[in-house]
Length: 338
Image 1: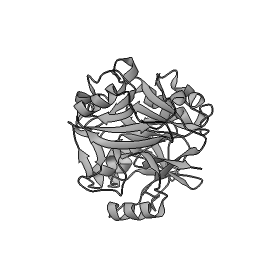
Image 2: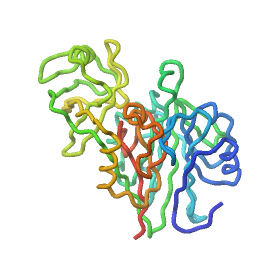
Image 3: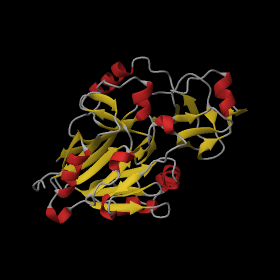
């Protein structure tokens, strides 16, 4: 294991055998990969989530044979990271159990009860926003929706894989380090009408468009709306995306919940994703990045396979976590020295 000092991250694409070696060495890991590769990992200091989409050092890729691994090192022996398993009834404790000076990485299985609970209620959890909580929502090959379930892995429980738990690693930092969550969202509200919903949820039937009642799926179909681009809400200047999963039936489904009486608008299309992303990165503080994740929809819709997005690497998942559940957003954690 690495020596004591400042907490650091390193990451790479690795074979299952290489990851097993890291686990056997006692390293603290955050792992992502296809369920078939995650299955059978030995017990150890790791959490994991199922996903076959990645931004690797050589560019975006779809890979069901390799694993992406984040290695957390440098902590003092007296301040080892704490790994926790949560269910739908206990996940509300996550912010109260987070370190007062540090950060938490949280993985949620997509389309699960614990995912729904967190996505709909996390902003109201006790102590939320006092300590950085970052992470992502696990998934599976998108062409297998309805056939597979998303899962998370928990190393301390003999490498258990579960579709109804959340997993977290709480990391305490030395006093001379601080952690901050930052995001890059390439989308902004378009010029279309305001859309509101009456209920909170991942699945809706009806909405109001400029005050007129509509079936949401019918509105999208009749107006030939490109659902590659998300709904965008403006929370006092902070833009939050809600990506669309399916509008092929009467009930529309989303990757994150919509909330009642919030005004949403469809995003302006992004014509050149790489150019806009590079511009956003040039304007953002990208120094001292420790952990990052992005959206699989940015990979698929914006043709990122084989293309790089600066030095950002990590899983490209069914959702991102920056305290609350986000979608189609780059999320990253910086570790700065005072």
